[in-house]
Length: 170
Image (tube, rainbow, N blue to C red; front, side, top):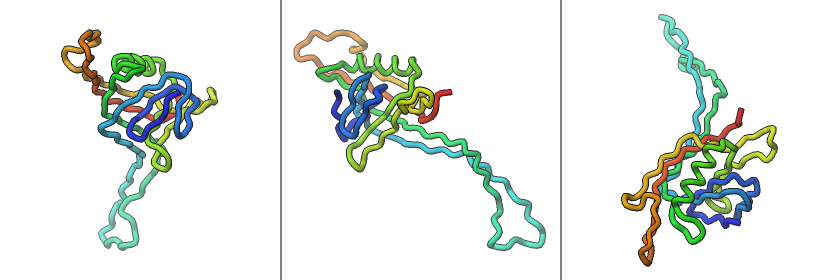
């Protein structure tokens, strides 16, 4: 069980996500520096020809056609950090595996009235949720996946930029 805190972003393949906890599945915590939420709606503007007689102020200059091609995406920039239960390197590996499996995921950040959750649908015939479209990792030089035996061990941060798209698996 993972307790959700207000300063982190969680990506999980668990279908048991409440407002305060995530139970089961694989869950990765990202310490974000920036979260961008994007909503794109493809609307086509069709210009209306203007006559030589002028145009009334009440008449629009163009018509808009809503194509209903909506894309919602979240981009998170932040860090995967070493924690007592899981290293940053393990979190990176788990995220890569979640992306390669192609299953619908859940992303959640914030608490209470300020919580945003894009949840996966538990019905396999619907299979809506969040899908990873792009990930970029930046590791600190000298700590590339190697075990450090110094005591105390240095804290390892792996910078991440990840983009997730909400939709339905075809």
